[in-house]
Length: 79
Image (tube, rainbow, N blue to C red; front, side, top):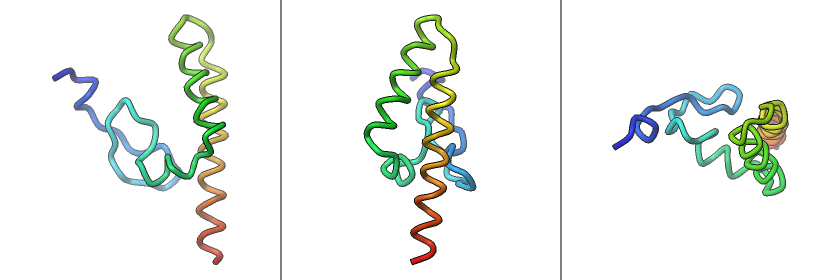
């Protein structure tokens, strides 16, 4: 099996310590909080970057998703 599929990293959601495969951005719990439209933006940005364009679109989409998840968790904690 490729190293790409076996390497682990921390979930990109703020404060999450769960380890996820390196090809994933977040753990399942946090990824499911990201709205579908944001997921589409992330994948589109990744496609642009992988085709040789700037990673800016991808990185900005990731930051928006990360902020969205943090806000969603804060709302859940206030309930």
